[in-house]
Amino acid sequence: MSRAGSGVSRLRASIPLREDLVELAGYHSPQVSVEVRLNTNESPFPPPASWLEELVSLARQVEYHRYPDRGYVALRSAVAAHHGVEPEMVFCANGSNEAIQCLLLAYGGPGRTAAVFEPTYALHSHISRLTGTAVHRGWRDGEFAVTRECVDSVLSSSAPAVTFFCSPNNPTGRSEDPEVVGYALASAPGLVVVDEAYGQFGRWSALDLMGDAAGSAGERLVVLRTFSKTWSMAACRLGYLIGPPEVVAACDSVALPYHLNSLTQAAGIAALAHVEEMEERVALIIAERERIERSLTELDVETWSSDANFLLFRPRSMPARVLWEALVEESVLLRDCSSWPGLEGCLRVTVGTAEENTRFLRALARILHALAGPTVDTAAQSTGGQEGGA
Ligand code: PMP
Image (cartoon, rainbow, N blue to C red; front, side, top):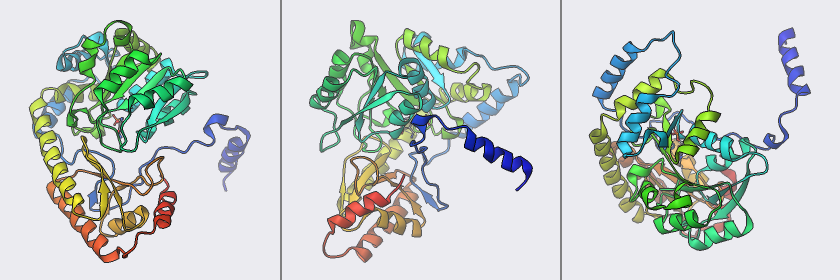
């Protein structure tokens, strides 16, 4: 080992990691080289060609020796116009994950709590912990719905500074009940954040509650959106939140200076001129989701109906991990959720192109028919859950 190398390892040994981070595993979706990738809820379609042309033209106008527009005024106004809200109600970030991080930097932190309803998007808890925010885990009911009772149970034992909903919920696929979100807004002491990363696939938007939520309740509602899914722009890393101007100002104040680079800003501005194409893509994905859903009901799996661009299912006749591996052998990659809280034995499939979905369904049918034994070994199911490390 070189002298520089041993110096680095000595340094590592002598500076302990923040204690509350030691147990925290990073959030990763294992990537395997396959032909059909249906594991990270991206859009299977690239953005429109005209969007790319426009982006190239905007990229030519950027003054690369200057910092970007710190207040990203044009993008902020375009997002605000798209939703019919004031620009002061829009905070943009490098993916909605960064918007979540800014919210928690501003409103979470030591001595404060964020509430989540499991099973749900792991990053709500993960980023909470990274920011030193305690996590209170509530639970959805047997059908993965948050009910008034779930809300009451969380609020009777904690006073969360931030309460997260996810609509449609990742990874279970269902939209939250608007009545329950309204109930939480009326009863939760802090911010109520509705993560709508998959909002355009869903049946309603919490943005509809923004006007209705009178007085202080309206001042506590925050809605998260992203360009990563419905806008086919995961590579651009652009997301945003819509909320009260005070919350937006707080997020602006904790974000790093010039956090949003000029190309990201340009990509978002160009995208918002392509709403129709985005909606066409969403319609195609919904039609394919319905086809997958119908096909799954004919196989030996338990499924849940979805309002998103993915579906959760649980094989009845074999452990999820065994099925996941068999699908990888067929060059189809899904997300193994079987080790996640409340999701024993479950896999999640992202809706792909028609061809990809057909390949997935054929491979699944083949494996289930070939490998399924006559009896279901529930012990094996739960072992599969434990094996399926994230
Ligand atoms: N929220 C939910 C529910 C998600 O599933 C994701 C992506 N997996 C995100 C937020 C983050 O999206 P991004 O940071 O790409 O905008």
